[in-house]
Length: 113
Length: 113
Image (cartoon, rainbow over all chains, first blue to last red; front, side, top):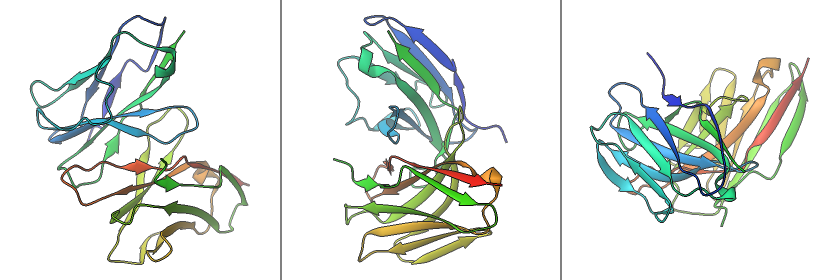
């Protein structure tokens, strides 16, 4: 069974630029999560989807971050404009249902200069 | 406010000995706890979990103990192997509609051959 796929793996941008990350969850997994992991910290949930609907986006900085999962499968996370403090690893995870174990992708490492 | 805490940033253990990783939490609503293992440049990998109705769960060399009154859990690895060297994250969730995982800051385990 293929795992959670993410791209790109690495991205370097300048502040105020835009960036987008892509995630393809495990096949059949209805629930998809985006986490932000800042160096030295544990992952922090940004947004959770159940199929193509948002379950929880309370920690998403909505003035600059957006995410969508239009067809209930893959998802994109966008930052516009980026700030220096957005430098982090962005992890995507999926689970078969909301209360089931989450499986993580390899992450996208973002550096904002 | 860090609701899940791992106070030891690092731990070194000789191969064959026991590794004990500790985790404390503050939110009494948490009822499900997980340990994830993370290698460099990879996403966290699910290791073992425990529900609050239990005080112990075992899977091969890995055992998780939960002390609800102390709001403390620990992961025991016996015997420790060099391949166990990684960063270990403790995570917890509450029985809400969402499955928001709250992570600790991680403990870097080094198993010395």
